[in-house]
Length: 305
Image 1 (cartoon, rainbow, N blue to C red):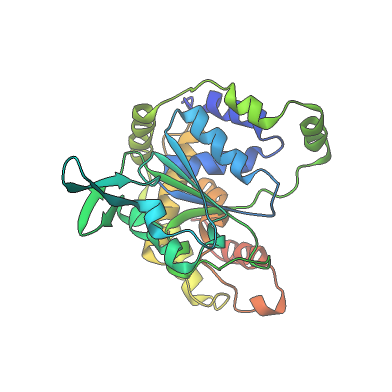
Image 2: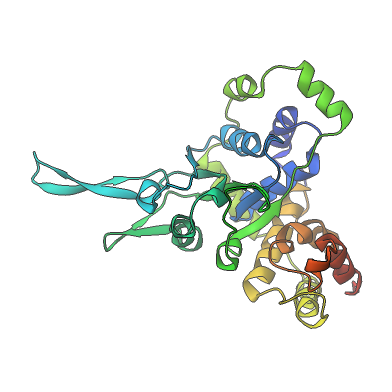
């Protein structure tokens, strides 16, 4: 089976150079109907990746620049009294869009960060006692700088758990950086890109992802990873049932991108770090042990049957 998204992947990789795996994981997250958190140093392409995804997929996109003085009403919207009609009318905020780019989300206060919780979890927002549905499909792609940088507020666990996957981009390799320096401005390239999909097509692909077969033995493997994360003693707490369900959805989406109609354990392993890194905190994190090593040890301890 050939994936219909290969041309889209090719286009994105022409803009985001040398990050084929990260691009595939980002698209996997959207196909699995999940929200994406991209954490890295400023200037490595976090915002560019979110913008090119929205452009190529033909989605309405709103960017919210998170700052310390941003208020929840700036995100959700506010009712304004209009003299002509003699009533308050709701003016929707930028959250009412297919794709919301929450840029530098950890520079806002926790109160403002929490304005995203209901939207990300329930696909709706409640303002002034009235609940309003969000457009479909709906995604949040949030970028954040490392918590060690000045002026950041760490996202709480409840907020982190709303993100299906967390990625880091890192510095490009030498050849990719050379091509970046010698090529056109990325903003100009994105502006010239034609849309290769639309919201209806994306909804159809998401439904196709849900039909990708996961055999009972594969579900046993996902469950074993979750159970092992809780009992192995490597982490402060293990994966929740919601995280295990997200892992299965992400594996289905990865399989669909690979052109497969069933999930195999290698698909689960491909997406596991992205799904688990922001949910599993190693017990010896204070000693400087890398989280990746603990995740690798966890995967190695669960046999594939």
